[in-house]
Image (cartoon, rainbow over all chains, first blue to last red; front, side):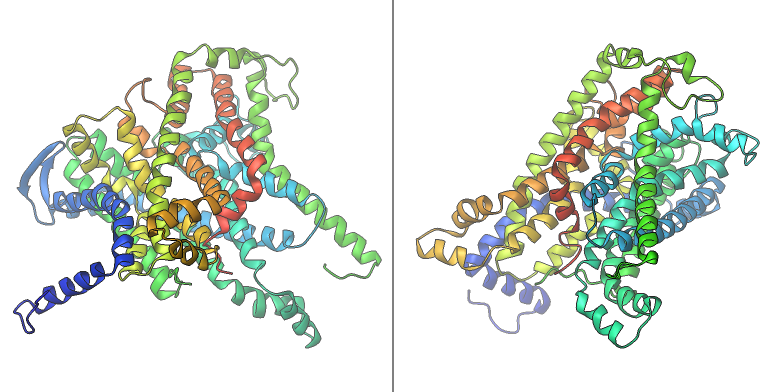
Length: 310
Length: 282
């Protein structure tokens, strides 16, 4: 209680005093106790391990053995020169950009189309929720069955049309296209739902006013709909971009572990290979940091609001 | 297209609109129907070229194959236990935290929210290595706990986020009234707020359950055999077990999808309200 002014540890003393004041208030004290379990679980199971990954990325450590010789940036140098890693990085960028762009365009078109009362609206909503609800691996297995060269309907059709001369699943380019198609199919509904919810918050009289002023439909879309939908678009894009950036199960199940993403590369290195374990830790840090930078980009550069304060 | 007058163009617009909607619904549903068809035809028909459009001779042999497989049945049970326990733990931890965020005042609230949001963007693969070492040390690898613990952490942002949105909807004089009657903050939370937001809590439970049921990377890391392996891991590995039995793979995909399709059809309104809660501020 008797904190003397001008103690040497000004910063620490300040923070301590803030906490002591906070804890003197009964309601606030209860609030801290209530968030404590969640806080501890998150710090212990997510942030502590990522700190360990970070430290290990500067070491030549072996799986399951603490310590290991310090190696400076050696693991990172190896990683960036490793051509499978470069391929994994490029694959992840291509997959993320193409699939999120397609999902956004199609999702927006669908949201605009169904943003009105019409018959069978509930049926449409149920139909588009179904692909969203089930596991990515199951969706990957389903599409893989259709791409398969002996029993796959899609492989049969594109071969009959003369679009490909070798089975879809034997070539990384066609596997990538297949993965993107499967992802677009599965997650466009989610995009459409988020955008639809955003559209429904735009009051109708804004459009009435624009119509009175003689604005065309195209003008209304670019001057009213897009700007007012901005926050919803940013939220939807951020979630979808980070989901795609972390892609693991889809590539894993679709390509029989041949097509690499950042996540599958990291996984193989830290789990399946003794030799690559130190490099795997560097890959884990790169995956984490790039995801973090994407989030920062959306939040700071594009000005997305994350505050939940009412 | 929203013009109210009835004219020739209007009719055409309407036809175009419904044709577009029909196309979209077909594209959403066709792959599912196709895989369902693959699951009810014989191996011979499966290999037919050109493929048959409608099943010529429906058979349940693929379903017989997967339900005769004890490993697959066990994996359904494993998935249910893992997703169920994860949901309960998330609701307990998450509702308490969400209440503090939604209805109590304290400093560092936005810092705490940022931390929770950070988990939503966290690549799970980045912690697989250290987590595996720690779980090996304490000897819980290949147990339900080794999957439930990370599942809880990664589902918590969703749980907390949704519950905050639902708890905020209730009027703030509720607690005031409870406190006048002598209730503590915790009692007000447990006896007033939770019962009143039961529909929201239920919606959150459905979405958390789906999230945990669909989890793959931790399950793939920490489960080694049939005793703990959930369906998300057992289905892709069917490719190895039933090397050429594509019908069984299709049947397994259908069996895992059906509970989710039923959940979606029954609770679609709730699911939509949950998915869009918090994402859009009214």
